[in-house]
Image 1 (cartoon, rainbow, N blue to C red):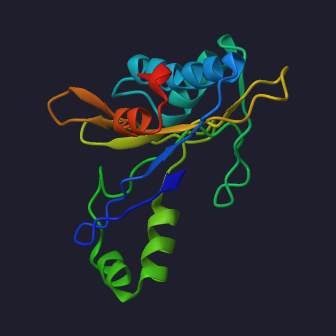
Image 2: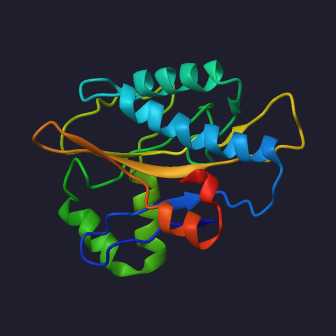
Length: 185
């Protein structure tokens, strides 16, 4: 499941996504747990001052260490592979006056502008991670050896506060409980 709500006033996105599994296969359950743990390990390992390509390389090392793969590419950044997330536009720079006009025109122009303003956590991105910024952590992980195990992704938002603290926004637990995915709690 994936949703990308947008605040009507600020036009800041609040992306959310997660993989559901209502079955009992222990291999799939373990894969889902591993995927969420990988997001958390990436978050714990990153800090302000790193550039986004460093974040991506660190994330890919964590992914590789866990014997899964992330082969994500983006239609808006086709030259990059292994993308593990993106910036939240307007979390680290204000919209310009021209952009604010575009954001007010229509939903189509707003979503296209928001999409184009994202900077990807890719091997090519030099933008620095800084306090006051938010990024997504959303690798789409597969088990390269066991094809019966589905791709899994948990779309988290890492917030780097102005005071130097950071938070990982997930909000999965209520849904895990509701769908009897208690093994994820």
